[in-house]
Image (tube, rainbow, N blue to C red; front, top):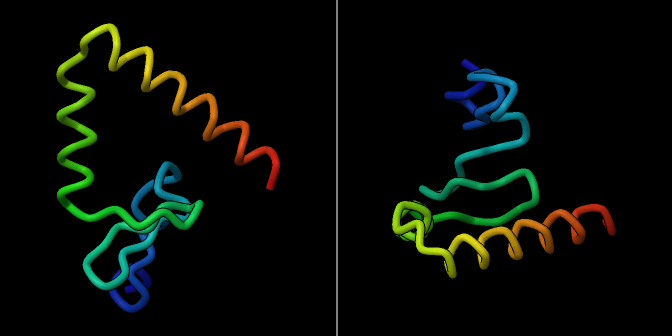
Length: 71
């Protein structure tokens, strides 16, 4: 019921803690708004798996973690 009324995804699993759905977009715990196209594009980049993309992905994750620690 909580997921239905406020579209909070936390009841699904602990991994979804802080995730929400609002106006047809998936909202991350950090407040990023993800459209279905962004999710598909991100998944496609991961699936490509080329060395440059993997290096870039690691760098983006590293920077995102550093920014989260600064909050």
